[in-house]
Length: 53
Image 1 (cartoon, rainbow, N blue to C red):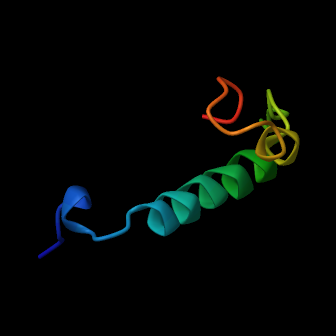
Image 2: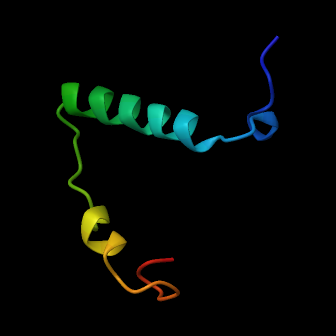
């Protein structure tokens, strides 16, 4: 039986795996969409700002 998603102590890694899988599937189908934002640039913004949050 599958565990509920919320029951995972840290769902972020699982979510990232799902998103990576979706990226690979859509790229293989020629439906790849470029990212809207550059996550690496957002990580360098000051803490407690809208872009960083």
